Length: 293
Image (tube, rainbow, N blue to C red):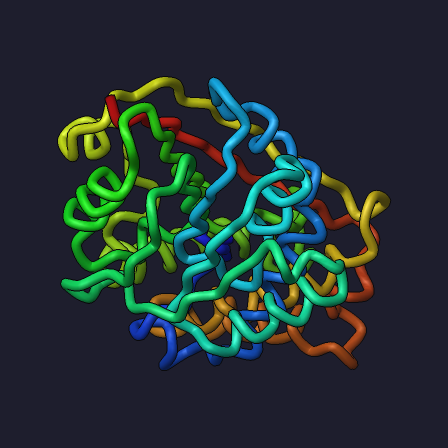
């Protein structure tokens, strides 16, 4: 989110990872993944529509599925398909299963709890399409994970790696008025954190996919710029994302910036992001489509 991530996903952190947990718990992460899915739904749908598929896939694996943003976009896009949704977090998978039941597609989804950093992956069958949104950058050994996907796919099978260009920006230029430029300084501070803890965030996956034996079919970047007039959820999305940034940037920011950030995060205060009507979600999402030849 998936995200990096919040994605996530994203995330960007759209994936449950051990090194995140000291500053982010599962429930908060699930909430940001759900918000990510709601706000970026059109963009996720556009990516599924763009995929260079020769035939409609029947068997799909969603690696690091989080709470299901990609799973449900793929089920909608390919009405004949079944999806195996894989994640390390039982909480995320439980949430995904409840949504599948609510949408009456639970017969088309199988959830698998698995640590994708483990040497042995579960048997996920022979999918036509593997989707990984804001999850590959969390792998301890992405090269091994890519080779595992390559070995799982049949000849002609497609692997879609979707990644966010870091956390989105939310505040307009010159905001907050008492500490202009705060958001950019926060991002600079978290870049140091992520360089240490999530070194593959923002990576170019093309060469890594080629090294794992794939043929790169295409690469596509979608620019995301959604203002708050289009979604009431943006304030809550900003609140969750800035909380995560606060956790990662604490040691790198001066006290004045932390105080200004706390004013934005104070949901009852006059400066809360929830009170602003000038927020937007600004980021980029890139997808690499690779084929096993």
